[in-house]
Amino acid sequence: MALKKTAEVIIIGAGIMGTSIAYHLAKLGCHDVVVLEKEDAIGTGSTAKAAGGVRHQFTNEINVGFSIESIKVFKHFEEEIGCPIDFHQCGYLILACTEKELEDLRHRVALQQKFGIEVYLLSPKEAKEIIPALKIDEVLGATYGPTDGMVDPYSIVQGYAYAARSLGAKIYTNVEVIGIKTKGHQVQGVLSSEGEIATPFVVNAAGAYANQVGKTVGLDIPVYPHKKHTFFTAPSDEIQKGAPHITDLHGGFGIGKEGLGLAFSGTDPDQPVGFDITVDWSFLPKLAERMLPRFPFMANVGIMRAQAGLHPDTVDKSPILGSVSELEGLYLACGLNSQGVMHSPAIGRIMAEYILGIGCDPAISLLRLSRFKDGALQQEGGVTIDYKDLEVGG
Image (cartoon, rainbow, N blue to C red; front, side):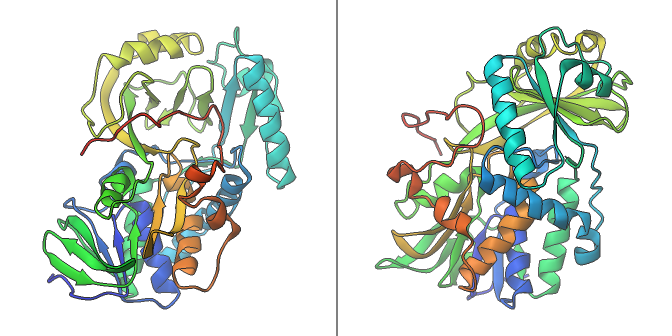
């Protein structure tokens, strides 16, 4: 397929966010949309390594709102898009092992219940009733959201891409964006490995590579790629089929059912930011040390395989959305942390409406790039990470 020479909107990155924005733009009548992906297939970046967790249990009102809308969409995704996504509401169980973590959970529940979300604060004993394999010696409490669950990220990105194409959008793979063409302070087009495309509007949805795209126009976008490992076990029935996904705040890991076995994941706080996604098997014993106090049976479960992907993190764990004052016509939809899959429906709609000038969700003004300079961070859970002295290499 020959590369188009002009487009009304160009989206950089054909992951779940880029394809969602493309679909929502086309759905709203903007059919002249081009999506450029440097890899040889769509959804091969962070989307491909995402676990597919979907939860209401956030600490920031903005993210709670994104979840409410997105989960409603996931329930009817096949009806709207025509693609099954294996959405099942198995629930999320979040564990606290310190008084600070428990207090954090109390605040979460109060916020989420204010929005009418079904979520409960549990005692350690009640948590063990849901997950009998859980050792609760150090557990002080937990939250349980039965309407949270899991989806298949691959099916979502393929569904959005198919629907966008059916409405006229063009998606090109093996086309790398080299730079953004500008005149004064206005976007003029995109320079790619396959030639130039003229456009007045560019959307940076490049995931972990959003900062690199920004640098082509002298823009510092504080998105920091952090390696996350996921390990897959041999068959195990210690955690039952249909059990909720479990997140341990203290241990910094997640674990859930994956086929006949289990999948568990975590990040190494000592791992520098960067783009390396080779599996570091030396991290496994470190992660196991954090898991075994909660799940002793894991010491005897075989590991079948592993993968590593990139979290496109921000310092406040909230995304970067909207336009930038430095360059008219440039829009950002990046820094999704671990929220890209679960919030792709809501953010795709919000960004499409904003780009077309038919709506401006309040989240846009709160999540702009300028918040980092203005000291108006929108912190999501945990402790704000200090990345200010780190430089992301090419």
